[in-house]
View 1 (cartoon, rainbow, N blue to C red):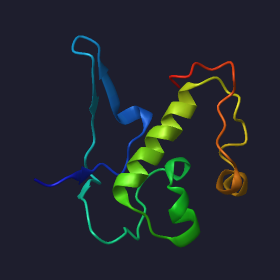
View 2: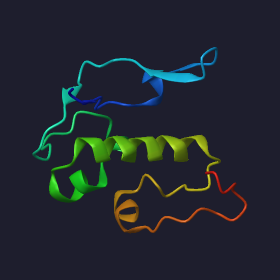
View 3: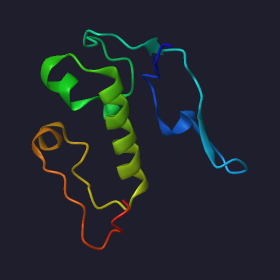
Length: 105
């Protein structure tokens, strides 16, 4: 069984199905199968670019998917992380969840 990397997960491609408590993805036009080797081309939106690609021009597709989901989670939270999109700050920042957020976040 092959694992497919979507490569362009963004809000416009996410469709919640509330009747089944599922989330569905759309637009698999840039999708690819996973690879043993790191991927050396980025085909998504810059604000969802994996941090390792910013540093090395290569990234792991599965790890990048988790990265994008984290960015989408931050996008859904209140706008407290205003500097998140700034490249240098993003590469050097430590992750901290404010105390007033639920521990489930």
